[in-house]
Length: 354
Image (tube, rainbow, N blue to C red; front, side):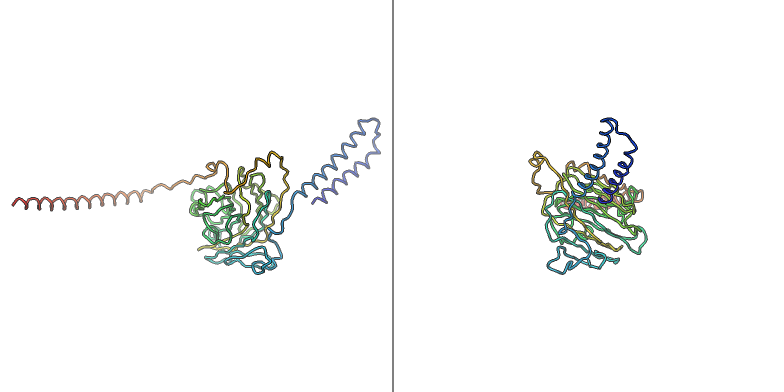
């Protein structure tokens, strides 16, 4: 991409130089215009080169074809868990079968400060819409290789979870379209609530039509300067669409990347094609270096403002009728029992006087 842009700028410069003889450079102003034009074209090319060099692929944290020795070799940097299996074209976390859980986890703890993770994945199955499930998750957490109820991994986790939820458990108000991608930060005490589709602990998210898509589907997770941005590309336009932007987020180092999935009564194939981790070069001032403190527990500023309000369903008319009926019957039974006890007590008291 950089080479093509550079070539384009040089072509523009050649065309300009070719046209120069048509003009008579009679004064210093015209000569200055020539040099300014050359500077702008060259500086744009150099800027493109600089931007390209600010990203470095970290192969030790990346998962891509060919998956040599994945999960079986001691030299592999990733482990498989549950139903996860390797094929030449993808790592299948769960097949399109009921009650399956699978995951792939990095073996190497992560210590990069500024990074970008590009995930190429595919969710597909035979079932019709809203008769499939449950979804998958991308993790950066303290604990690895722990199965559980949150898309195949543990609840009350410590770290970062990106969820691709394909089944609406509580979408009765139609306030969002599924599949839905969301962000959650766990500190070891927060629980992901499947019944509310994680609304209580969601930091941000968006709808993304990732299931049975005719195009390749991607997630982009970027973390830099305590800011997490999440983007999706699911429409085949090679354009990133903003999904979530969370500032004031702090993550400790030494955590592990992973991906997991789960199926229940409903199912789908959940495949990871690649997970590519890039280190970002970010220049910090000495003041910023001094102000940056060591993080031990994941946290986010103003957590309360991110928590979604989940409406509690009101009692229906039928429920209210039966509640009232059983309450009246209960009071009636208590009254009868009370009268019986009182009558027996009164009779015993009368006998004591004879």
